Length: 184
Image (cartoon, rainbow, N blue to C red):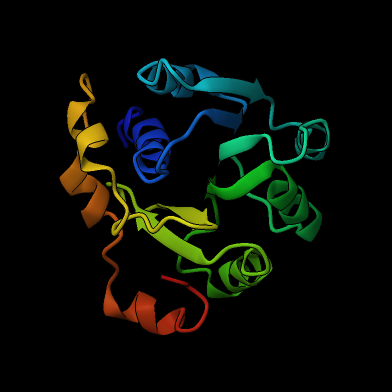
């Protein structure tokens, strides 16, 4: 897979879904490509933390300090989810890595934990069939897409407003496997 796809889709899907993001927390061990994409949002304050000590990074973040959290690692720990909820503002959202959608049991567990905190839980596809998970307290990733923001962004190799919307289209077998689990 081309190395620019995941960072573009992780950053811009989140940033073009949230109505007015001012603060972003990125937890990743590979921040360079994410920093490049976040640099397009000059008005946004971004903090970075390593994913090696995920709980430590979350514990050190203040309550309601982030509009957007980008979690470049997988975790189905309910303590992690509780800290994510604590850190995010009332209209916050998170994009995170998760087990592939073929692992229904692992994803069901993760989505049920996240369901305690988020109104919207939706996977979205990348070019190679892998997926990211967007969880939002307020904004729907296709209904609330900020078209003006996505259209004004320049320099992308993959992301655009059409890709943003299309990424959330799921085959029927996925919808059937996750009926009642995915919240859209």
